[in-house]
Image (cartoon, protein in one colour):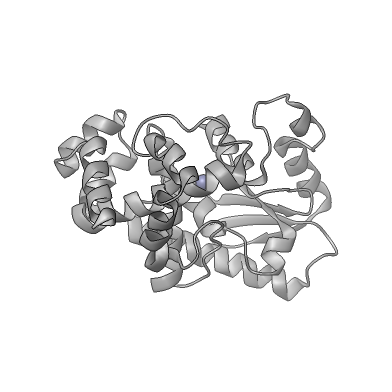
Length: 267
Ligand SMILES: [Zn+2]
């Protein structure tokens, strides 16, 4: 899960995600950065989150405001999904200009400080990965869910949608998906949506592979949530066998959901 999640987010920067790759070696590792910031950064605590920032970049009020936003985001996501993070343990956020691209690891979230500054950080998306780790979920489901919940919560509860590939959150996601389906790039990625695994080159090719994959995954998850309802999907987040649980919880397999979703988009 850890490496999977790191990979998922590394792709947003077009970075390679194999540990030890040349690209990653040139960066401070997550662990080094966490150690550095806990020693030299500015710590801000909230009830459900601990945050560390580069010092001297944001004003104290800006850091406090973001800590409150994050804290509220955690509670909103838990309320919406109907799950609570085990033991109510605080989620750790490291916010630095040394973070190239937002990502989430086993127990920490890393965000670029300039994205926090200009309110484009996908903090809700990353927080979903922490609240509902979805360990056996295929990439399309865990990424689609994180983006779907990010849009839903920012639209209905509060905070902002740090969407990267979607234009108008859940409201525009089907239109975005249709646009991709009509293109060669979308057609190349489509066979990888709704199945285990991930498209080749997703970690390297951001605009051709990651963009259509994330958009289609969010649209498909929205389609499932709209019809199956969250209550039924909840056991799927924690399932040891994703496919079996999806089928028993919703009455349909991934393949059946995908067929129905495509039929609706193609109407
Ligand atoms: Zn993600």
